[in-house]
Length: 142
Image (cartoon, rainbow, N blue to C red):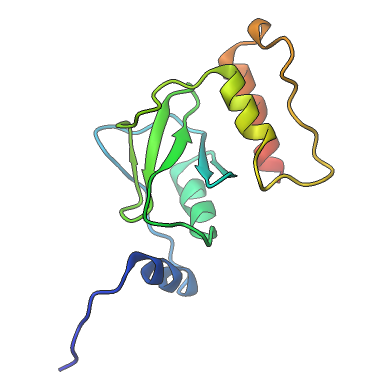
């Protein structure tokens, strides 16, 4: 009989990627409203559904054992825990402002040179849901 040892989550995630198996997203208390944006150390990952988000996150190579800020379609803050593949509404940053969301998009690391930035002007005249839907569409193009 073989001896079984504990493996760390980074090795586990790499093994899952190699086997082309995508772990499902789990929720604490309730599901969030899709689409969502996950900020992985300055790289923004967007998903229109749980399966799309899981697939895109599984391709992210630098997931560490810490929490990542997540924003849902209502501008509500969530936390993503990669060790359990868990989305939780329990976070310190509960509400995101329009300007914070636009700055997060404009200052992301995974921006391509030909992409335009989102204008920070006249944000007060725009609704939060329209800003978020614009940013979700821009992220889905990449």
